[in-house]
Structure formats: structure tokens, C-alpha cells
Image 1 (cartoon, rainbow, N blue to C red):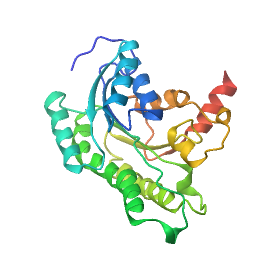
Image 2: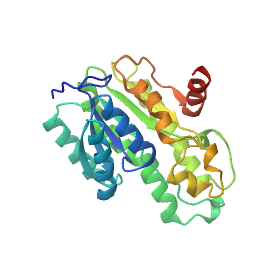
Image 3: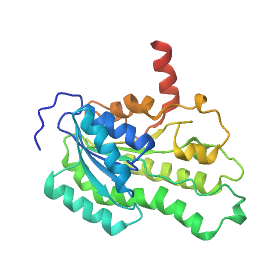
Length: 249
């Protein structure tokens, strides 16, 4: 792939899951503005097209992939398609996630609990499995997975979501340890209280002015995607990074 656009991610190929709204959409636009070609994965075609319009408005380019992340064979087919088109993958942002319901542990409906695990854990493992060979073909592969503070705090009624994010943390940490002696870097990113659909689901009465706009995390996620990034196996608190930048500026 060739790309003459000037930017910190010029010529990089970035795959973003959950890209139709929220943090995924904001990051896709930011990556594209920095010159990356973005492969956008989400279930809704309309949402993907809206993000594509935003990317075109900043002079970027994207490939739209309507795909449910629980479709494991579909993820494998996507990996093959990326290999045939680009021969590599430079950036993977595993952002897709679901909250499920807030409930006592013994009251979860099995289908809800299983869906939360399927989207938040198993799907990310399938992306690791399918995209790891492509990330290793990059000169500086970068994999970033979106986690939550719920993974580190015992909070009643958050059992399904918190357990899924704790499992994600461990899985990604092990993956990072396995690639520690390669050019590939793997990290976790916790955005904190961010103005997203999931946040509204979890805290319907929360004052949105206290929430971080998704776009405010763009710089942190760009930094983690840069070839110059040396972090590996880190759990990054995105809300702290936003507050630090605000205090400096």
C-alpha cells in the first residue's frame, strides 16, 4: 500500500472494531486524519457509512466491513482478505464491547452472560488468532484492546461485564508477554467515564458534562499506535491522560 498523505500514521493499515459509534468511530476518524487507512468493523452498515463520511471529510480513506464480532469464521475471512490486499496489519484496536445487564450473579440469563463473554472476550481472542500473523508482518505492529476500570474493582451487580473485562486483561497481558521480544507491542486502554451509548446504559442519570468526549482519547490512542511506541503489556488509564493534557494546556 502506498499513501502520500502526510501524518503520523501515514501509510499504516488500522483495523478498528466497534467502529460505527463512540470511541471506535472517534478513533477511526483520528487515525484517518493522521494518514492511516482504516478498516472499520461493526454490525450496522448505516453507522459505518456515517463514519466513512466523517473520514472522507478529513481527507482519509476507509474500508467498511459489516461484521458481527461473534462470527469467528467471518473474522478468519477478514484476516485472509487483509493479507491478500495489504499483506500485513499495522494497528488493531479491539474496541467492540457490550455491557449486558446489571444483575445479581445468580440472576443473569444464560444467553446474556454468554453474549457478554462472546463479545468482550472470545471475539478479541479470535481477532488475536486471525490478526497476529498480519501484525507480525508489520515493521511495527500495534494491538490495543479497550478495557474498563470494572476489571479491577469488585462492584455488586456488575458480574458479567466485570468478569469479561478481567478475563480480557489477563488474556491481553499474556499475549503481550508472548510477543515481548518482537517488534509487536500490545496494550490495554481504559477510557474511563466516556460519553458513549454504553455509559448511558450503565449510568442513565449521570450528568454527561462529567463524561469525557470520545474524541478526547484520540491522542492517547494515536500514541499507542505509533511505530515509535515502546510500551508493551501496559494498562493505560485514558481518563488520567486526558486530565494531564488538560492541566498542561
